[in-house]
Length: 276
Image (cartoon, rainbow, N blue to C red; front, top):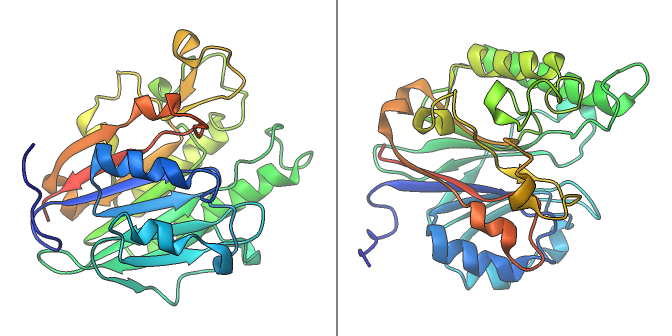
C-alpha cells in the first residue's frame, strides 16, 4: 500500500457523506476512513445537538480538528479534518431559520487556505408545488438565496460539497422522463441548481471525471427491496470547486459499496482529490 503524505502536505482529499445520524452510524466512519483516507470529511444529516456530538470516537479516527453545527433529531452538518480549520463567522442564516444546514470553514492547504462550504439543502417534501407544499417553497428559496450569495462573491480557492437534494442532469437519475415531476429532478429545481453553479463560478468536480452522458448516482432509496438489482439511483450529493481549482482535480471516488454496509445510509460517500 502506498504511503500517505504527512498531514498538511501533498494532495487534499475531501469527502462528503449524508450519514443519516452520526451517533447511529459512527462505527461506519472507520470503514469510510479505511476506504478513502480523507483529509477532510463533511457530514450532513448528523441529527445530533452539538453537546452530544461524538467527538471522542471521531478523534480516534485521526480527525483532530472538528467543527459542528447540529440540532436534535434532524438536519445538522459537521466538518472533520486532519488539517487545521477556521470557522467562517459571517456566512448567512439561510431563510432566517437557523436550521443547521450550512457550515463554512477555511482549511489549511498547500498554496494557501481553501474555503470549504458544507451544505444540506432541504429535501422539499413530495409535492413539487410551493403553494401546496411549503417545504418545496423553502427548498427553492434556499437555493435562490445561495445563488445570490455566490453571485455576489465569486469563488476562488473554494470547494462546495454536500447533499444538495437535486439531481440536475439527465443521467443523474435512473429515468429522466419518469422523474421530471418528482421532487429532486423537476425542471424548476434543476434550473435553479445549475444557475447557482454557473453564477457562483463553480465547476462540477464529479462530472469533471464522469462525462454527462454517463449514469452517475450517489443515493438509492431504502424502499427498494434490492437496490443493486433495480439501480434506481439519483445523484443528490455533489462536489463543486471554484474554476481556479478545476485544473487541480486529480481523482474522484463514489463509494458505491457503502450502500451495502450494515445499517447503511441511503447515500454513499463521495470524495475528490485536489493538488492545489
